[in-house]
Length: 173
Ligand SMILES: [Zn+2]
Image 1 (cartoon, rainbow, N blue to C red):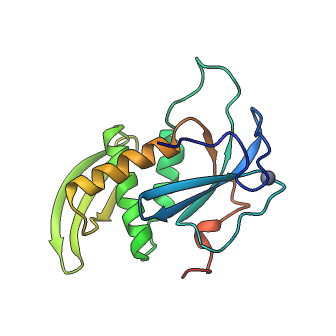
Image 2 (cartoon, rainbow, N blue to C red):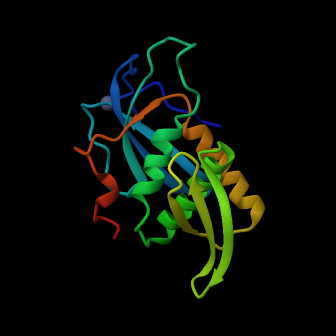
């Protein structure tokens, strides 16, 4: 499974340690895929990514390097809170599963609503409650997508700098 790329998806220039780059997450027939772009290359807006963020290649300090950035993933999860787009609703649920596995969230109760099954997650650090709509996918498919996402989000620092807010883009809204 492809983890974070080590070179730009457009110009193929190698991304060096500490360098900031743009990550675009796409939905494909096989699940999720990601492309990393160096600062000099503008990611194409078509197809629109399901999520995008700024990341940085970690410096080569294996002891310090986090395999999985819980805080950044939680931040991404939170940013999808009010998005009603089906693919973003799906991504949000998958991120919740991932954060649940990492104990950033714990599962509260689940309930059936007119829109579908809603799972309530509680942030273990803050007790913030998040209601998350479960997409209509079978368990196995959800597990597979979730594992794929974990892979794609591992191995790099993730930054949310406010200067770039691709989740608010309107190209696919
Ligand atoms: Zn490039």
